[in-house]
Image (tube, rainbow, N blue to C red; front, side, top):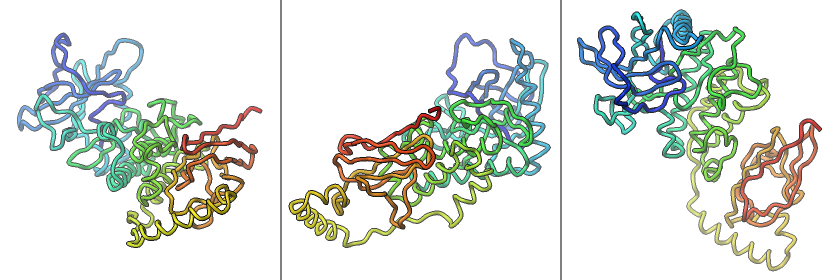
Length: 402
């Protein structure tokens, strides 16, 4: 069975001189809080008999106000224990659940230290979460792929057991012994229940249905954050990462999976995490594309040809990409998605001849003014003159009420 070493609204806990005595739970000495949320705290603790470090989540049984967070947690943990029979490698393990007169508590594995290495009682210890890793920018392609696979494997365990998580986000992805573990199961519920809209707002789908497709949507945003190094509310922009996403097959596949997972229409998303994981790993980990040794020579020849063409006929500047002269990678985002892209009245297609559909990144666009036309089958056209020497991201919206 599994649980969380961080709360759904957790943040690094700072020691406070006036916080009062530590909660008391059987068999453990609570050292200091390492995460806190609206109703419960996670403490770093030592087992009095073995001296082993654990993370202990403590939730008051008699909170101020009318809510009953401990009752909610008990219900979620009991449901999870009944549904997920075996220990799963990418769900954080709960070792014990208990109550005192004042608290519900449960005991879990502590996360690794954010600085590297295992958890420790050192005052500088902070739990390693995916959020803490993302503070340093986007992850490497291999790390993105590994973390995405492990996150989805954890979600698969829940979805196959008929459960939904309802709060998938980087803060709830912990690293234990270097492996990503999905955590915080206080909002877990049955996939067939009428789930209320709870969790973290920016990871919720726009349709508001908190089912397996909602978990898929949130997982897509988490993968997006790993790939782009941008916060979830910037989706699907790629920013400075656009060139890497275009050139790297690992990042390209992850970006495609994230885009499919985050479709506004839930019918167009993966039905559950199993299908999403299957798409990610369908042909194994992508491999880097080989770079030809003659690339520099070819580029030099192409640059010479471009110079001759420019001198001979300005018309080519509007209708032929500047081959060999590195342009810019441009993000095209529309709301709603699935518009085709025309530059200077030329339909833009990938190397296989398939038209680009928004949101997409088109590589090597010449750095100059282009006439951009975006065509949506149901909503018509959007067009404008854009200088790609100044802007590399186009965002267009149609008025859905008109």
